[in-house]
Image (cartoon, rainbow, N blue to C red; front, side, top):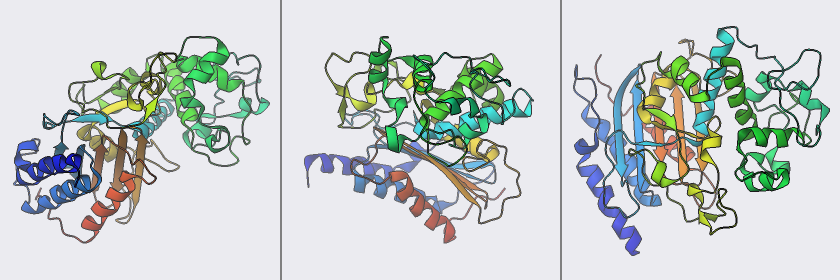
Amino acid sequence: MSHRSMKFLAPAFLIITLTRCTETSAPTTTELCPNFEHFDSIMGQFMSAREIHAGALGVMKDSRIVYDKSFGWKDEAQQTTLLPGVMMRLASVTKPVTGAAIRELESKELLDLDDYVFDLGQPEGGILDLDPFRSLGDTLLAKVTVRHLLLHHGGWDRDVVGDLAFREIRIAEAMEVPSPPGRIHTVRYVLGQPLQFPPGSKRAYSNIGYLVLGLVVEEVSGMDYLTYVLETVFDPIGVARGELIQGRTFPDDQNSREPWYDSDAMSKNVFDPAGPQVKTPYGGWDLESMISFGGLVASTRAILEFLDVYQVSGDDIGARRTGTESSTWRRNHTGSFSGTNTLARQRGDGVNYVVLFNKKPSTGGYYSSQIRGEIDDLLDQGLICWPRT
């Protein structure tokens, strides 16, 4: 066994045996069932087997948070244990939050999902008036609607041309602007490129689409993205300010509740492309510009409260839940980039849960789908006794 592996086993053991030390306060009207230790065991064993050094699991039952724990280490040197209430980068679990912001604008009749996104001279106009870089790359861009962006039907296919949301250095060089180019320059560049399929004709997962939706939120609301999200989505459901924040690229700017983000991958620094390479989570991209598609940081509690109210995926992503879901109804959204793997899971039996890890697999697969299988199996077997209301 490697020295690195042996070092990790110590905190895993401490987590399992001293879980009361990392337990956040739950409602005091009833005792927690003792078999919540099943959750402790799953997380401890899962993280130990994969050498994941920081994680969190939060579980809600019938609109009440009943379990919320942090596991592992805050720092790369593994000297400081994670405290309760850890916050981590959400990666693409940010997207349903953006979806909810769009749905709230729709509910206030400030936009229609079939409104055109780009004002490119079409008679109906569009929401965003941005000049394409050099020239319009595709006349079909005038047909892209808000709904298309929500459902990943906008016409961009990263499997064909790569993910332009992560091509900051290339875009900056082409446009002769400093790197990173930021959101506006990125979208102007995208408008100068051809689409890969007609909008609405098929689905292709798109970070660019949700980057654009963030600009739509700001243009229509007249607020910056995060302010609108907090005021219209999270404040009304009782999430305290500070539980959902803008992620920051560099460790010195991170929130004190965040752990380090674990990755051996190295990249050019998008803020200094000619300088030395950096670990990918810390300069391999401009996290601040990813705010609406992957740039938020949150606690498990914030996302659990969100899951109780808003749909996290599917054709109704971001819409309010109806409360009429069948007991077998399931939805989830995952997030993954270097140093991050996340899961937000909804179930029709009244259970929501959130998993945050500070690492993603280095060779294929996703921790999020693996841990979902283990937790769902535990729940489906009826092995958890829930606190009495």
